[in-house]
Length: 413
Image (cartoon, rainbow, N blue to C red; front, top):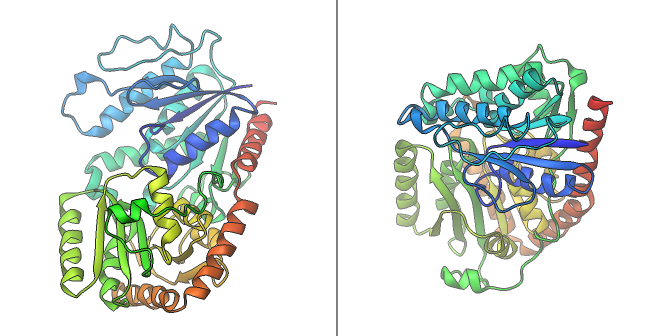
């Protein structure tokens, strides 16, 4: 069986959990089916990539969502074969396509590629599978990020999901969200296939060179955050909690680029306030190599995930695989990954739109649970060991690929 994976992200252009998911899934699936990846961006030096696409240059400085739609059109055309994929639109990028005609099935990831999958279903008469990593109606803060483009991204997602032959949810919570947000989607079409992790790559990293390069002391307690600076990830709540932490604790924030200038200013003010209060805060900007992140996670006393919306929360699983205890908000799929009191500690939080309903209470809850593990390193170590065991036993990519291929076989038989 030949399958087309449609995605915005693919190595080396990966910036979030969905991109990690697609990269790992493609490699594991390639042992079971023939995989052709179609992605955004520059050409890739990968045998799995059949096409890489740039937004049409003719769109100029238009809202970025129109560039996304142009890539979706190029992707859908390319699935028909090499001739169909050789469009002449300026800036389209490489689109080698396949000499064998359309694949047996298209599988899209995130709203960026969902419309490409839907158009492929219509044009080439093939099944379309959507994996839901998040849902646009549950991310209202994207209005701030995308402007009018948010209405278009929501339309792309809704159109694709409601017409998809199969929907894969990365957690039980995600499945519930799909059926709640899109009630016209039949429950029989939505299946849970949890995210996975490569526990050979994500494992305890005993070296300390990365820590030392940032002036961190591996002998002192360390609290680590890894994530994008977006409303979803809840970094402001952790920064608000920071002054309540033991002064011995080193707070390390590995943060991506902020979604908006307003959020950047808000976070910068919280960083200044925390430092003024005596918090030993190290800010690491940009995307670090995987080995560097693994080393920081390994030596952390606790990893913190203060998200207010998280369909799965792959970064928690990465921390667990490195043998680190997790403190995380009790939202979405996090509750299916982190076992409260066994692999980490969960913090209850009620949300209203893009915010915690009671920000001070949530921040205090984070500080209390982080403090409990900083004060009891034996407990933190025990939770970390249990987390590593859970990651190995329950979340291998080979199992994820097998379950995904079973969905493919069912829809093409």
